[in-house]
Length: 177
Image (cartoon, rainbow, N blue to C red; front, side, top):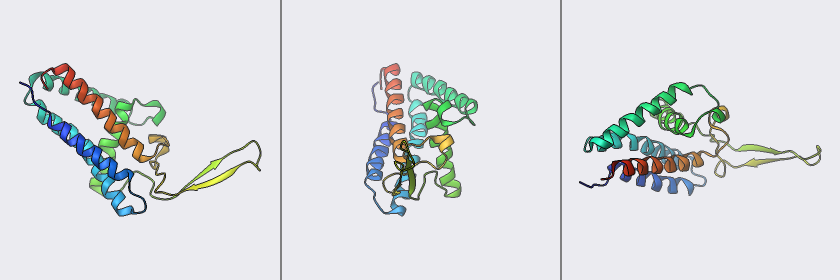
């Protein structure tokens, strides 16, 4: 019995929200709304996948095992720096869980919503230059130690690619999806 996972539909909506996010220039409110849409949709893929798995015993076993594995990673790397953590952990815990919960419960956003100053250091003090990157161009996550210096939109794109790989794995292993 072949069928299309509903989780793919959620992921397609997340991709569309990401495209919208990429095209927002100077509207901070629209950026916040679209950011939350992206984070929420990417988290929802997991919830919908859990329900999809109820229709297929093999998929259920695969998802249950993967869910346990991700939660083990969450506990193991909870306080580690960005550079010390596997990508699975970063997307699962820091973006899908923490960021979503901060927004949903406190309406706090983990990205920088201010202009960012970047220093380019040359061989002498005369060669050094400071640039100010407008928030519409570069919005890193606020906690560099936990997220690195990637633009928050790069985190969304990375999470989309991560889910594409996860769903492809489930599809391949389950055969009838």
